[in-house]
Length: 53
Image (cartoon, rainbow, N blue to C red; front, side):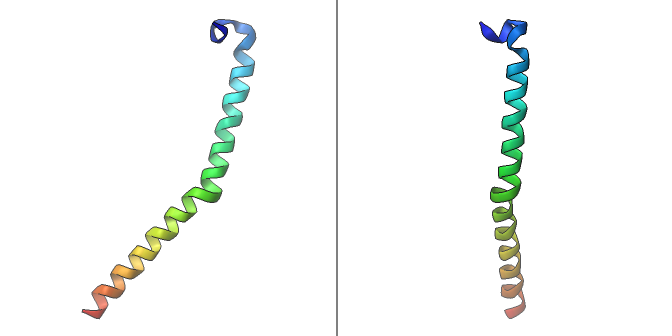
């Protein structure tokens, strides 16, 4: 099993940090802003509905 051989530790650490960095970038740049905008729009809509009643 390669995960138990010390020769492969650096490769696994490097690839896992690389994947983590890519995931953080993609989430912060593309996925999370859309959720934030959706929440802001929902907040404004509920405020408009409450003010109109």
